[in-house]
Figure 1 (cartoon, rainbow, N blue to C red):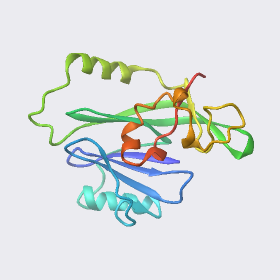
Figure 2: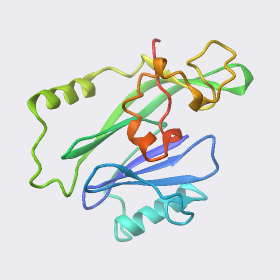
Figure 3: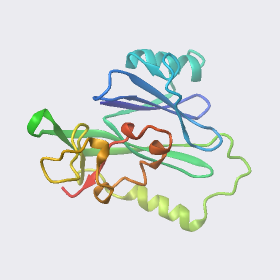
Length: 199
C-alpha cells in the first residue's frame, strides 16, 4: 500500500491511496466547506489504473497542470480529524513489516506525520473552543510510533486464526475507530487501516 496527502496551491488537501488489496488508485478530495472526504468512485475522475495516472489527474484538476506544492508519502492512512476550521490527516510514514502465517504481514508503525490544512470556506466560523483545541493537541502529541500495529490483509482483533475479513474486525480492539470515521462515512473504510495498540 502507498498513500499520499497532497497540498494544492489553494491550500486544500487531496488524498491518494493505492491499496495492496486493490489494483486501482483512488483520488480522494476534501470538501472545502464541511471538511468531509469526497469520492464518487468514477473511473477517470477519482479511480485510476495507476498511481501515476492519479497524480497526473491531481495536477490537472487541483494544481492547474503545475507541480504539487507539497506532498507527504506514506504506507497507510491512520485517521483524520476535521473541525469547523481545519482538517488533519494522520499518515504512517514509516512501518516495519513482519511476516504472519498464510502470506499475511503485520506492520508496526515506525513514524507518523500529521498533515493539516485550513478549510478554505472557514472564514467567519468560530474557532475551536479552548477545551477542544487542547484535546486536539493532546491527540496530536499522543505517541503512535512503535506502539501500534495493523495488517492490511488479516483481522488481528480476534484470536488466530480469525475467520473474519479485515473490515469484519472487533471494534473493541480498534484503536483508531473514531479517527477512521470520516473514511467510514465516505464509504472508504478500506483506505484507513484497522490500528491496534499494544506492542
